[in-house]
Amino acid sequence: MIKRPLLLAAALSALLFATPGSAALQQGAVAPQISTQGALDGRAFNFNLREALRQGPVVVYFFPKAFTPGCNAEAQAFASQIDDFKKAGAQVIGLSGDNLDDLKQFSVKECAGKFAVATATPATIRAYDVNLQRNGADTGLTTRTSYVIARDGRIVMVHSDMNYAEHVSRTLAAVKAL
Image (cartoon, rainbow, N blue to C red; front, side, top):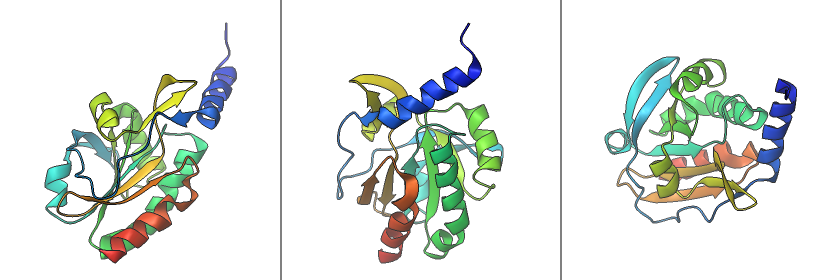
């Protein structure tokens, strides 16, 4: 019987050695529609990108797996800067392949109830070209890719890097430049 710590180590190893399936969508492209279930401060809601864009720009950031070290740190970094995003008129939403129950917990614990996270459906993962692969095989996870989407639905900034460190600063700078 495989022990839980061994499974966690294997999952973390997959994240370290996994690579994006292909390049992310490009700046200037029209962002594909997203309609899914999400959570904000532990409460479920329906997210629709088209409706969100009516209120202003949206930062859509994909993260591989809730409650892993890099994803926790990235969510905490977005939470610490959320007031700056709001001052610039933008919403932030994180997307992963995690189930809604896990995302409800993640939205409270790691996002501090300050911004929403939602389930990235397989169709959304394909549309945004964020399928994380290992040795050419699908891992069921997403790459760590951030998109800033202007109110008109066009992508104005893309940052794809498995290191979370620059996602918040780059997306905030792009939002402020709009």
